[in-house]
Image (cartoon, rainbow, N blue to C red; front, top):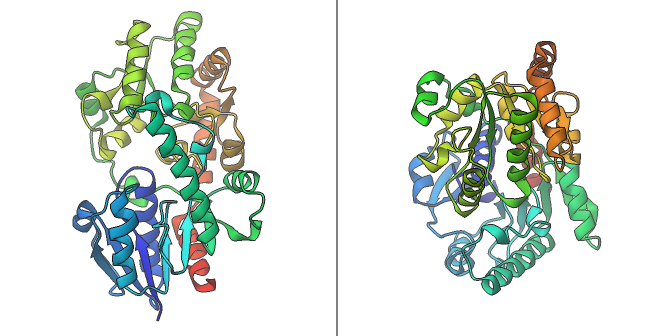
Length: 378
């Protein structure tokens, strides 16, 4: 019986938190042999209840990307005498001496600075980004294996680190969180009323980082409204941060505040509420310029919502012909494709059916099997 530690400090947070929660839940079902120690911050200690007696919660309330992560968390890990430490992100304690497996969803920050949305002084931001690149490089060098969710992400690693053998990378796709599918009890009309949303509306759910390309989506909405006579709203759901404030300012500048709704600026939008809005929307629109796996269009498909997405390599790899594509840098093309989709009922039905078929191909149990196989090999 091996002692495996999992850095689950992101547990139930957006992004990596969903990933680590799903992997842990499915590893619990698969592995009855090894002993697991799940390192959690305070919120995760409350949320996570092990279902396998070989899984033990360990308090580790150390903030990610911090000095305490690099020293206090490091000392705790050493005391637990692990045979293997699994980090479903890149932020490893750089001095940790034991065997490590990482799962890194993307290296988008290598390509997009996010400087426009930071509240940090520019010199400190540049220093922080340099540290990020060094930590990612060290994580890749130190890891016995690096699990990635798509060939596109693997190609990015190979392009940026050509001196690292490609056999280090293991491909394991993601999937829709099964718990999300069960959060469908809210009345969509009540959620719409709460946030001032009217039918029909287009839906976007993600962050507002630079690579998400939301300003181009707003420009395309103007074209859709002015050239195609679209009467519906555009609903943008994401957390309230500096990036969101910039998007809100752009909407106000264009006098579109009654047309483009940002519920996250009013309240935290729960998973239950996003599910209700997916069930009520006309289409899911995702204009991102770069993704590692791109899960939110698949979550839309899981609720029968047709998706129209940017024509980028990751989307072509994952979604194939189950979505409609547009040029993410061309607002007129985005508007044209959106109008084509919402005006064509046969196309909507076709994409809904193909979406249901697609989500069956991406399963967390399969991802957990690959992850466990990687642990055993290492």
